Image 1 (cartoon, rainbow, N blue to C red):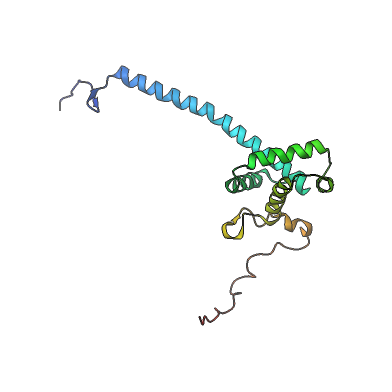
Image 2 (image 1 turned 30 degrees about the vertical axis):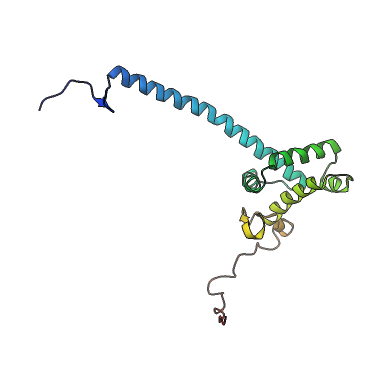
Length: 175
């Protein structure tokens, strides 16, 4: 067996050890830059979720899970291209009014109906656990829906069925 000491070729070009080392360092540097840029976007997303969750806590009056808040924010954003601007306007109105809670906000006069619509969508999402209209509804949470909070610890959260073999017979279809 003989060893060919000539440089290997890549795409018809000769590749030396020095060239290979340069390429490896360049790729490593790009990976490092991408890694450093990544946390900034993650921090920005975390800040958006935290802001949305705080706004949701004001609107609902409950302490809320930011993980679920992030899911609601993403689902609402898919259905509303101006969601960021709508949320900023709603938060600005709340801060300007100085009201301590949602009851105070509802008592305000002269609030833009679009802001109330945005607030209603957020509250509805948290209470129902669903975002969107029935034809395109997206289930975000079932057991953590706020509609179950008032009876938490007293009544169990209903399940989709009472147990195995609980379904009745299939109805006859006479179409």
